[in-house]
Length: 329
Image 1: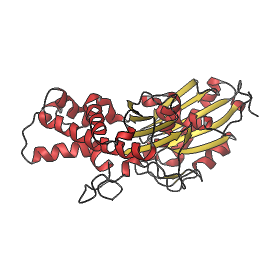
Image 2: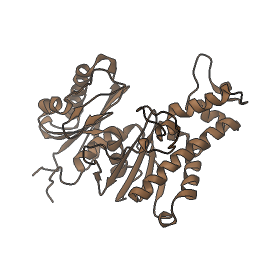
Image 3: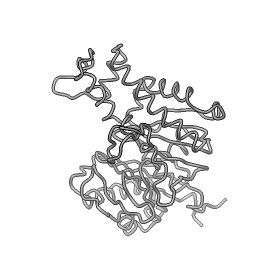
């Protein structure tokens, strides 16, 4: 049985642009942190060498290396959670069938779990963030892609092969829909992620629609959702419509999840959600209009609160799932 007074838990968040590590006590309270660019183009071995050094440094700051009891890792996929292998990552070259858990467990000698980054983010928000205190938490991460997760009673819903809750790949436009990054058509991700938001605005401009959107884009830069939000906040009709459409599409996705999983809270996170009411108002309006009466009043829609810490907190949270670490009473 683990001594809760000495236990250290490490969480690693792997991204295409950054690496983050946190070390906590048995209650998930952060004791030390590390963050640095991932420089992913160097390949898997170089990145993992950095991760090992960051974990070692953070653990030594937090306590004794021998007290490291659990290491959780949040990573983009696709991956095999059961085998602890990253199958392939589009934004990080050289990770094909990479045995990450074997490599880390071999170095640190403690229980090590690999998890999809969206699932980990959901767990982080459920345990420490906007879903805290709720038994049933659904999570959407809305950024370059759209991911999802569902947590019930502190445990991630993974499905048969660890690929449950792919909320971004639900079909919301069944006929002649836009092509998703996965190659299929009509998925939510093809209408609600950052690229699709910008694409729809540029298509409208190319079709001759009048707008001030490009006035907000500095010379030499490309249109982004940030500049589109600035234009909308200053009253540009096209920009406002694009955000209304985006909220409508995401709202449909939320309705589908609510009526399939019956959560107590739906948490929306990721970079796109930082535009605030431009997104949340049409999402909530759409959900209110379309959700079945039986579900009204049974859930709330909340903005994620952990921000850049969500991956690390989710990775640490993997140790706190029921049945993982046996703590004395």
